[in-house]
Length: 519
Ligand SMILES: CCCCCCCC/C=C\CCCCCCCC(=O)N[C@@H](CC(C)C)C(=O)O
Ligand SMILES: [Zn+2]
Ligand SMILES: [Zn+2]
Image (spheres, rainbow, N blue to C red):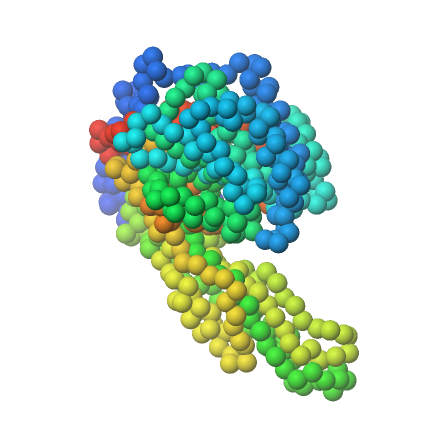
């Protein structure tokens, strides 16, 4: 987030001016942080006492869970496009889960359905019909991974130095396998849930989820099902993200950006390249997209969740950042500039525009009749598709450019994340139980898109959170090189889900004693 230089200059600014205000604010802050640790009596809500099953796994179980993940990674369930998915590998995955999770497929209160041939929907019938059901969501397809640049072949599932390597180890077979694994281990311990829930594993998330998540959501809607909340990928434990902020913090994405794929096209008369016109379709279009790249969309800091994220992290920083962050009413403009500096934080404060495809030309000596560029926009929660399209037109400001919206959708609404929000509070509580080193949980936004967006008709509580710690380097391996997960992190993910499923067996939302006791 804040670069060392930028934070230092913000600090210098501060030192030059508002010393009195700062001293007063330090006092307020000290009072606040003094009461930060949370009392132990709030631990372990949900199932308590004898009915609580501890997340302790035998050596044999730990070996089996790691081997099951490795085998899943070895199946190249690649989605190249909606029309081109590896159906052989997807079918193999279906056989694999039947083999390694036998209890899941033979328990009377669990129903398994295959949707559109390769997606899986499990219905786990709880004993208490008064409790509204929820869903754990993941996807089993992956993006392509050519061997080049990888330390080990991407579909080898090789273990090295305590890590399992391979495409899908963090996006997102780890979740698919960990959810099923946690449930299998609970069933082996005779667990019967009180609250019903669904496990949904989509097979085409990486190409929009049209036949997986979208069909499952429609199926549940046709059955009149409403869900209390859904937990999908798209938020993480952030480690080493912010200079000056040593501790990891949890980022639960309560929304995700909208999106638009927009094709820009310029047509012109073809002709002989020895007698070129002053401008060609390529030149006109290149200038247009260059203007777009040089003119960032407006900075929307303060209109999404980014401001409240910073305010909630404030108590974790040392001077002067703690003061800056608790007083964004003064320091907001500086902070919004700091956030613009890195691609990840820039994506939080504005609609981003990425030029992703450019096509033109048919022969070296022919003036091209047409040029096309496709841009991929990710829309900030405070903006809409028409607003963003209007800005694009104004920046391009050239009538020779024509626009084709390939697909577009608005940002997702903010899911509730107050003290009454059951799903959010359940995640927070389980984070605190399983990751004691995490001292802050923030409601963030997912800058990419997830299958959760297909479920808006059946749930208002869409949360995106994977219980794994990621640093900036591991973020680069998403869809990139050397994707890997440590065996310990995977075991912790299974333990987290094992606890979360039990924690969900309660009617009441946990109530913090006061705001200061909150994570
Ligand atoms: C202060 C710390 C700042 C850190 C900011 C990082 C923000 C993290 C939020 C989200 C991480 C991205 C999670 C990736 C999930 C996206 C999966 C994906 O690739 N989906 C496709 C869907 C498409 C419809 C095919 C996509 O392109 O978005
Ligand atoms: Zn994913
Ligand atoms: Zn992905």
